[in-house]
Each structure stands twice: as structure tokens, then as C-alpha cells.
Length: 339
Ligand code: TYM
Image (cartoon, rainbow, N blue to C red; front, top):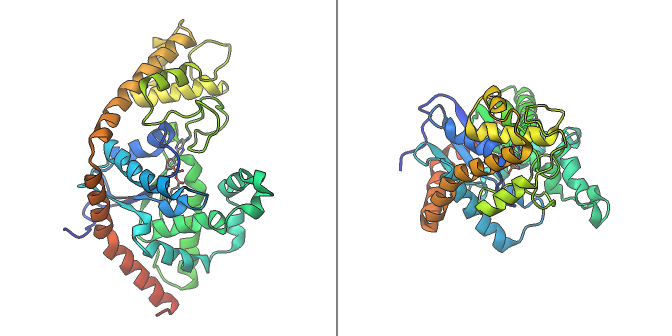
């Protein structure tokens, strides 16, 4: 196997959790962009199973989900010839660097993370959320920083909800470099596609579409059937205005229009002209057919992928980047006087 070679300039690293079901927010906010810019960069994409266990998972389901998400990424166009795709827990360097970074990051920095506040509140039914949330959930952004910093990453393409975590990774890298008077960590840049940075829920367009949403019909899943997609879109919350235009004040219709815009790749003006004088029902019907049409080839490709092929790609992906991760850990240990 060819070792990993930075032949194409800048390096991209990003990740996705194998918990819950992949939805069009993940696709439009992240996966589609990863696939589309593969030729521009050296790419590493990671299925972050260690992040997934920061909240309770059923072991049998988690194992299946890891393969499912890998299959979906491949079906969405991640090409193992252009990108390394691997599972986080297959490379021990991630947890090793995470521990080291723990020891050099102030607690106060983690306390500011909005996602921890939201997720720990979600566990409030058990007692007070913060007390019941795992240390892992609190520490989650440090593992994410380790993921990014291990590979001399230049660019981290994510949806908006992850930008605070990437910002933290930058701060951790800078602080570490200063403490040890070295340039050991490259400072990564976040890359967010503005238009699809935050796809909202269909039932609650005030909140982002999420793998953990409990509202029925709030998320369109990549593996949803055509009927399920039609039903979810037709029932999506809008308003009584009934005019199809990009008005941020009308969150429901605005979100549906953003989804239409990114799947159709039409300009906003053209979309508004197309639906001038037509109501929400007609627009929703068209949107449903468009989403079905765009997801169909992904589902078809996914259904044809043999499990053995997915496993092989994941194994090769890990082996290709292992030397790079191990080299970085060795350098870090050297700098801090370990071993
Ligand atoms: P995760 O699994 O929650 O989401 C994967 C990617 O999907 C984006 N995303 C969205 N984009 C637009 N609209 C939405 N409604 C929406 N929901 C999710 C996320 O921003 C993300 O880009 N912590 C990360 C995974 C991770 C990672 C990393 C990412 C671990 N290590 C290192 C980058 C670099 C997460 O939980 O993503």
C-alpha cells in the first residue's frame, strides 16, 4: 500500500459521529462539501466512534452504525483513492494525544462550550444534567482537537455547530506551542459553507436538524424512503404567508428554500421567480421530488456496497495514516519530556 503522501497541497480533516441516523443537515452542511472538494486537497475523514460513546450507546447498534456511516460516506462520493477514511478508535494516537492535551488545557475553556451545555441539559431528566453528564462529554472538544492536530491539518470543513470546537482546537494548539516554545502544532482554519452552515429542523425550524431530535419528522434521513420524505416535507412547519421567498424572518419556509437551493444548485432569484404566485403546497411537492431524486443514487450505491469492501476501505484508511499519527505523537512526547 502506498504511504500517505501530501501531494496536493493543503490537508483537510473532518469527522462525523456514528450515532443516530445521518440526515440532510450532515449531508448539505458537511459530507457533500467534503466530496466536492476532494480533488483540491489531501483529505482525511474520520468516523468518530470515541466521540459517540460520550453518551450512552447500544454496543451492537454502534458497531452496525460505524459500518453504515462509512457506507454512506462512500455512497455520497467519498473516494478512497482521493481520501483516507478511517475509524477513530482504530488509531490509539487519538486518545493518547487527547490525554496529553487534557493536561495543558484550562477547564474554563471547556466550560464555555455551548454544545456541552446543551447536551448536558438534555440529560437533565436523570438528575441535574451537569452532574450526570459523563466526563467524556465535557472533554469531547479536546478529543476533537487531538483528531485535528495529529495530522497537521490546514482546513476543517464543518457545519456551524462545530465552529466553536475548531476555534478551541486552534487555541489549544497555540497555547501548547507557546508553552513549549515550538511549532509542533499547525494552526487549523475552519471552513464553513455559509448557505448550508445550519440546516434547521422541519418541525422546529428554530433549532438545527439533529441526529438526536425527538420530534417526529424533524429530520430527513439519507436512507428515508420516498414516501417518508414526501410526508416529512408536506408536514414541515411553515407560516400562513404562503409566499415562496427567501425571508429569514420566516424560518420554516426559509429553511425549505435553502434545502431546495442546495439540492437544485439554482440561484435564489431563479427559485423565487419559478414560484412567484404559487403557494407553499406546490413548492413543497417539488421540493420533495427533488430531494428524492438526489438521494436515490446515494441510496442505490449504499445498498450495493458489500460489507467486506467497506471494512477493507476502513482498514486501509487507518493503515495509510497511522505512520503520520504515530510520528506526531512521538514528536509531542519528545517535546514534553515523556518516554
Ligand atoms: P456530527 O457527527 O454531529 O456532524 C457531522 C457534520 O455535520 C454537520 N452538521 C450540520 N451541518 C449543517 N446543518 C446541520 N443541521 C448539521 N448537523 C450536523 C456538523 O457540523 C459536522 O460537520 N464533533 C463532530 C465530529 C468530529 C470532528 C472532529 C469534526 C470529531 N472530531 C474533527 C471535525 C474535525 C460532530 O459531532 O459532528
